Amino acid sequence: MDEKKSKELDAVTKGKKKRSFPSAYSVLFIILILAAAVTYFSETGAYSKMVYNVDADLFEVTAPDGSVSEMPATQESLDELNISADLELFLDESIYKPVAIPETYEEIESNPQGLTEIIMAPINGVYETIDIALFIFIIGGMIGLINYTGTFAAGLGSLSKVTKGKEYLLIILVTFLVALGGTTFGMCEETIAFYPVIIPIFVIAGYDALVGIAAVYIGSQIGCMASTVNPFSVVIASNAAGVNFMEGFGLRVVALIIGTIIVTLYILRYAKKVKANPSSSYILESKEYIENKFCSTEDAPQLTGRGKIALLQFFGTFVVMIYGVTKLDWWFGEMGALFLVSAIIMGIVLGLSEREIVNGFINGASEMMGVALVVGVARAVNLILDAGLVSDALLHTMTGWVVGMSPSVFIILMFLIFIILGFFINSTSGLAVLSIPIMAPLADAVGMPREAVITAYLFGQGMMSFITPTGLILVVLELVHVNYDKYLKFMMPLFGILSVFAIIMLLIEAQIAV
Image: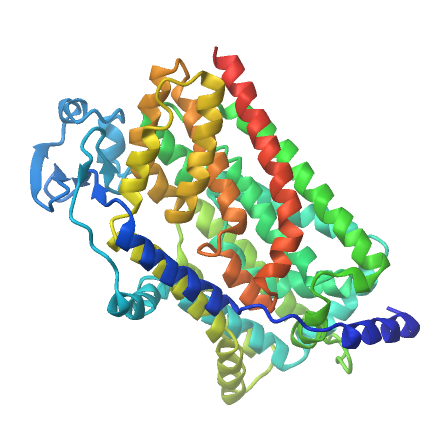
């Protein structure tokens, strides 16, 4: 950026009155209190749940009153319970979470969540997400280590020269790659590791941090929304519905391609506007903080041979992580171990002493404390709703909305239902095993194939994941120091576009079915 434009931008930034918007913590605590309030007046109830006990080779059925009964692990037992999934899917643990049993809903005594539960929920939320929090700390430690010697700043300076004039290609490449990860293996939480790397690249290229957030987060979510072979959503939902996950595959591929193009063009349009006029950035007031934290290349040292090796190792670690997740069934434990070992090796490569490695790592990890806590507080909302027995009751109420409808109205309403359920049940696999055994048979009554319900589930849950504060987005925004309202300002027009697109695709599927 030339000196004149920089001075003009600084003047605009200083002259712009800062608006006070609640932090990520305040947003989540407000939602937490509202969720607890809902448990006082909402209908409460539960479906019976069935889970396969591997050790005993039995099905265990837990009734709404908490009593547990056992059934032989046979196909006949599944048929008796009106569960359409094949027995083999339980035996090989493809379906490993408790499955809701159709037509077993019972109203039960409410369990309102009071002050004690509200206070304990964030604590319990941190306990339940400790694997993610630890991974975030280790990522921060690794970033802190490579920043300790100025190697990252030197690398960014070199990269800005190489990409000059072709920066838009970075947006296209990143968006399509993370969309591919989302559609194939549900890449979402794993992207936390990417932001400290991607954000500086985009900001140095003349964009703002929102462009980097959008390329990674929205890119991954459009991939998850149009899941083609994602085992954590489309596969487990199809198994629960008793259909092959390849049913509806062609339509989801088309949705993936068109949806990714829509998202990419939207991001490019905003990025072009910001590059031409930096004062048009939605997050102008955060510009100085973001640049100082992620992108300062002033007085950066020259990139040394050791630095080049360290950077290659740094990016190579992400390649190994992706391979481990996709091929070796790695999760946060294995990913954390990978980055920890890589950080130690990196310190040695950079020629740091033992004391410097420890200090650099701890300083980097400490900067991630706020981000890690947001993960736990976000989970607290789901814990309150689960303990308050709200989710099953909401699902039962919504099943009555779709009875006797035409296929087109049915599929649109199913889409809207899954958007709502996606807020209360933020886990894709959790929503699948709770709702699909109940919802999928409703398609039979209106002459729709069950895979249409799977598509509505994917699109509805996917749309909610773009904006729900109980999901990953507040974690990302806290990491980059961007307010939620600024993200919504950027996202809501795209949310409307994608909602219309999703409805059109669902209507096409409904017409094909009839």
